[in-house]
Image 1 (cartoon, helix red, strand yellow):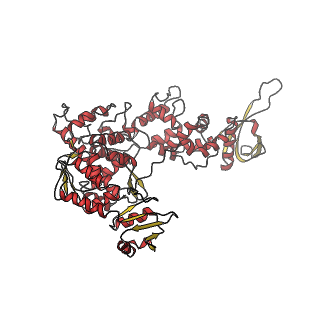
Image 2: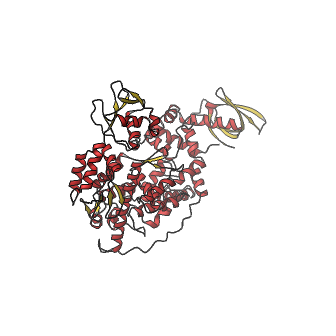
Image 3: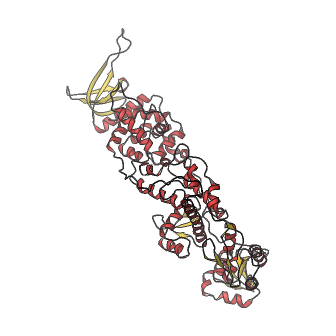
Length: 592
């Protein structure tokens, strides 16, 4: 038989508005396709021990403590039983259907809570908290700033690598071994652990996003690459802190001290490992130090205030906006090159080393790539002359002119009929690409003094460019059309409104609501008793006599056997007769 708690919860669920009810369903991980016909179905399922056990996993330490207090109070005599103390934790428990509207725990919730053990966690062993010294006077501050600078530069390199070729993911969603090795070999990261941490940080900050089995840079990631080092670091730090689970956040907007992290979700077996992973990301990004204490510029943020951006900026290496261009076709930055300049310089040169002084090398291929992306000989010269402390060396100027003179020998675009045409003033080059085995998938066919293909103009352009032919894309008028090769992640889908997610289930629950909830509940109990052929005690109100306001009540103990036509049938084993009782006269039903 269903206990009275389910009946009360059903009434409370029916009284909620759609948004509150949808939030409860979402918090309790209810499937939108759940086959619930009415609020009574919902109440029974929400009070099922399996559903309750799932809900306990999501409880923070404060919420678990509040539920424990309510459970202990429920065991007291009725005269002394009390509700949970008012506060945010109680509000959450009520919203999730673990306490009733008055703050009292449901019987099945209390039973499940008592039977569930908290996860055993070891007390973290951390180094002694360093003495708080003025900013900049502690060598640890400088080391933390160096870690912040290194992490920011490394994440930028990871994004650059993902722009060149998307990072691959394995089935578990983590970075693939081949791309982990690629990041290490190119100097973007120092080891596999750094690669995994920085990719996770990039995803948490919205700079990288999964698309199938690939990780792509997001539009926000492109914007982030153009910011200063301090701005880059601060933007990611803000996203990491905002993304911390509720159990780690304080009411003021900061976060809990490191020793409290392992026990923040006491019923989640996976939480200690997750807490350790999150702490590692904050250490990697220099939000906390090796002892788990906030770094000097994050002390105020840990208490809920804004970070001390000036403190970080004062400790970061200064950025430079000039480089030395050399005769060997290299560029040397005498310090940390401003990110927006580094971003453009990388579009025309390959970076060979990364440190506070980086080196870049120009080649015919890198200059051709820059021209393909929309640069011209004039724009390259203008940028490099503005950037250079040593003018434009003659060998580099010659290489720019040579690349520009060759670039555009081939042109690809759509003609008036929508076909993709490859044209050139060099008939020999057209003949060469027509027989190039690497370009066979394009199916190039001679058409007068041009080649045509069924592939799109963009596809033809990139295949021919990858084969290292000097090609440009043109529009219908023959004007040059710059192409952006980078494949970016699609904009994130807006978070679904829970009311919309559960629209069908909510409509079904609302349609089943009855003005006479007591009668609906009674009918439900009788149907359940008949299904299980349960032995029940039925209290019936007898007809009143002329001198009575209402009739007397009489109880029968029967084995329910049938229900129909407004009557309950059952075997009264006390006198071994079958009784037929009008449902309209039944006032109470209970277990025998």
